[in-house]
Image (tube, rainbow, N blue to C red; front, side):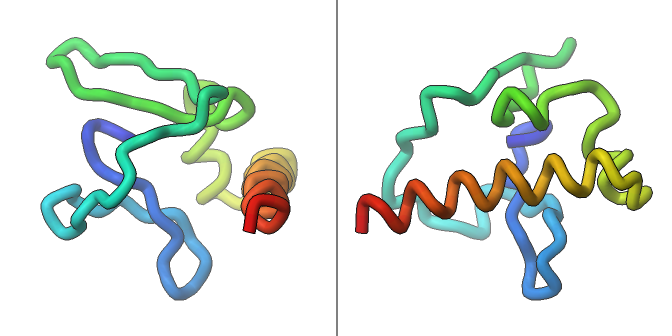
Length: 86
């Protein structure tokens, strides 16, 4: 969640923002390790702890190596957990 929008990987593998009205949420549960914050206007932000630093997403899109590596590490760890459940 970023500013009440969903950050979802697009077909190119980039995490872009999409309005929630474009989706039907089938399971509203979120991972327990996400950190949730609210902006001055009440907008919601929720990310895994390692991706929750201010400026992280900007660093990722600027192709800063540490941010890119951290993003894919977190995503791959999350996907590995899904594979274990399935």
